[in-house]
Length: 269
Picture 1 (cartoon, rainbow, N blue to C red):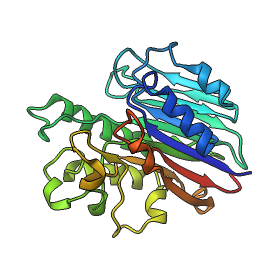
Picture 2 (picture 1 turned 90 degrees about the vertical axis):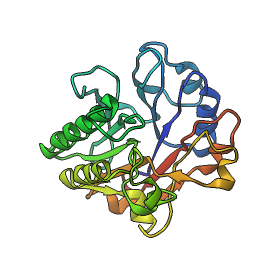
Picture 3 (picture 1 turned 180 degrees about the horizontal axis):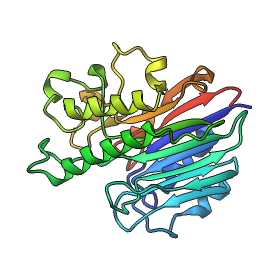
Picture 4 (picture 1 turned 120 degrees about the vertical axis):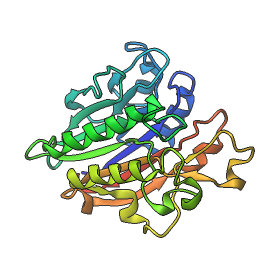
């Protein structure tokens, strides 16, 4: 049984619902995880999603900010959310779907962190570092249920490796690529024994981006991207990931998100 899981920071699901259905119809993922839905709980545009064949929807939303959701053609065996940093700001949702073994899919939206990489003067950056610490502690306790495989996706707002950014040297002091963030994300990966599936398929010495700023007049020509969106899996599932797609063309669609969808295709999952 094959499984295709996609992740996309949609930057307002109601504004871009047409792009969501375009993705679903064109690439046919079994599961799509969305971040930054900016949609109050209960107001998710489920009608067009269900019309596209995705009957199963889990959402965790709030007005105007943040928000995560998972839509699926496979039914959910369970679903949950987890608060971080003492806040109810809708940054995590998980579902479990049936597979060769049950597969728990975690969908995360890590805080962006603001502009100044100093937690003493920037509360947003302090929040991001606290979030990273709590995520590391959580996965260190073995949050993947015994007998399950697991997939972690989302806008993690960190480009951890040198070639995950257009210029390692220029971005070392820029939020999303500072050493304190990148080292923290790699600790989370190690603590949870996660496999970085994008880098399983694309060597670490090759440039790889999933986000291009709105500020660039011509984002494609400038190509100053960052890899902020990730798909990880447990080690037992990683060998079944036969393909990764970064759907770059979505960045050129009308009224696009500044992130593009990323999709992993699994066999026997």
